[in-house]
Length: 287
Ligand SMILES: NC(=O)c1ccc[n+]([C@@H]2O[C@H](COP(=O)([O-])OP(=O)(O)OC[C@H]3O[C@@H](n4cnc5c(N)ncnc54)[C@H](OP(=O)(O)O)[C@@H]3O)[C@@H](O)[C@H]2O)c1
Image (cartoon, rainbow, N blue to C red; front, side):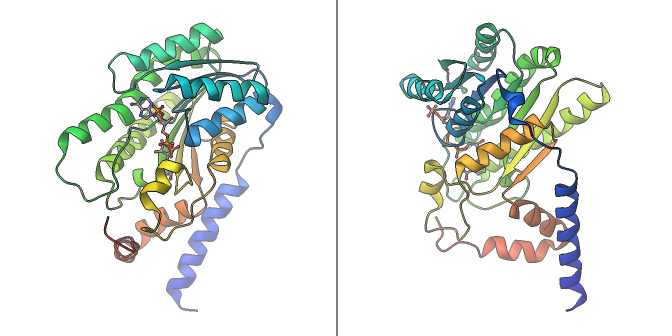
């Protein structure tokens, strides 16, 4: 074996050891009665997050734009074992809705232990066509509303030694084609919440922030865009959701799910031109 493959292998092994040897253990019973707010919970990963929290016996507030669908998800949560469930229809592109949702959750549950920021606005999988207005709107939904909600929720999380969980993407760590507006919102998230993690640690805050970097997950909206275009395995939304909850509950700063996300980030740093070659040649067709 040449020196280069050995180096790659050694780096990957070191990364795995670093992750697995330092993972704190998760105790599901600690989630009984925990007060949680989950955004983007009407479908996809958010819906699965709500169901896991329900099975753990949590008290839950869910939000998204479609109230009728939320009502159905809330009913499912109750039948799965949630102690209490409330829902509020809200549009995160609206100036005041992000704060309204946090206030609603604090009032209904009497405080917050976990806040999971997960929603995203719709975006295309295509070459950027110069639509600045769409990029601005997406920034509002995928980034500014997260900042607003985090700021509003921090006092309650601080009181309760709470966890703030931010669902992000590999697209927020590694630039990929055809998702420029979406990627910009996810890079903004990792930059902002990465800085906030340090600030809270310096202040010795009670609040932990977990940034979850996800690869391709088999939600309907993601698969509609990339099926037949990208040769990447899609991982199950329910498993992604469980890993997100474990990361937040154990107060870890980062989740990389599935395993290949951390390898891809490492390869980009170590071998940028090889990584660029693979990224630019990973598509069956140009969307
Ligand atoms: N799926 C993947 O492959 C993948 C990969 C990496 C990262 N992620 C991340 O995982 C998270 C969830 O992704 P997903 O695939 O589960 O998404 P999804 O299935 O498209 O669900 C998005 C959720 O956001 C809500 N939403 C959309 N626009 C909204 C708005 N303006 N205001 C409030 N809520 C709004 C939607 O409900 P309504 O339509 O009812 O509002 C829905 O509940 C995102 O942060 C995403 O970036 C996903």
